[in-house]
Length: 281
Image (cartoon, rainbow, N blue to C red; front, side, top):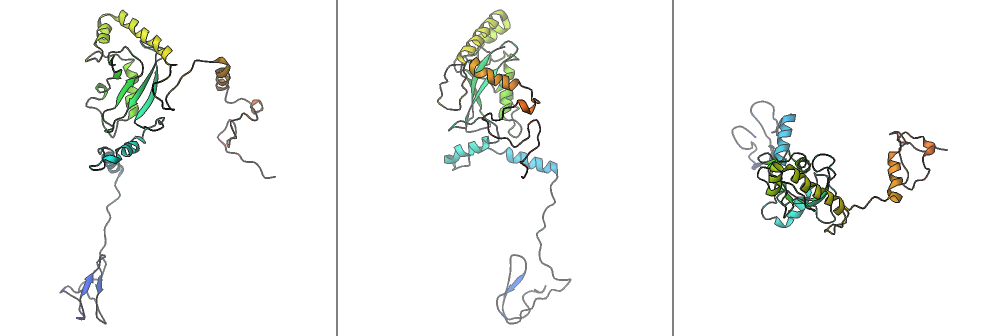
């Protein structure tokens, strides 16, 4: 290909390929000349490898994209939602991934000894609009006495970021609500008034719901999902052997271990992380 234009053989035209080379369409002795330096092919120059900050920024932008389904793909919305939730750890239900079961054990504070079961509902516009609903009544300023829904919006007001916050932040907020009582803009005005003006009566009402929670925890749940959290009373004949087994020291001599405990074989040497194998005989 000459700088003045066209092939030099005059025997036919030439086509420029996608890689910048000329392919002759006809002629017996096509020759290509270039005035100037040595002929070279056109190259596609790749950008430099991005640094760590650029990679993190790019990842954040990808995560921060709207998780709602593309226009016209509404029939696939349940599958898009499930793939988004795979980044979170949970005990999956048999069919629906958008409802998680939880239980809160409170060991100190005003609600000490309370055992409150709740459900975390994840909407289609996740990560926006999560709701926490308790299965039993809880006397708390931030819990609606009729719907039993906890006000979690105030915990993330103007702070929720899709590429930073996760569902475990919601669970931490649920636990914090029982240790740090807030009474501004309550969902249960009666509880808020008693907490501010009549603390003794408030503690009495709280103790009533705590005692009730320890009884209703053994009741059958309203859901038929096989993975729902189910509790049963402590039975010494069944639970004592398991309890003693858990309390045994880890460095107990191997001679005291059962040869066959019904739990299968282990590939790891007891008391170590070393993998062992049978020596050839």
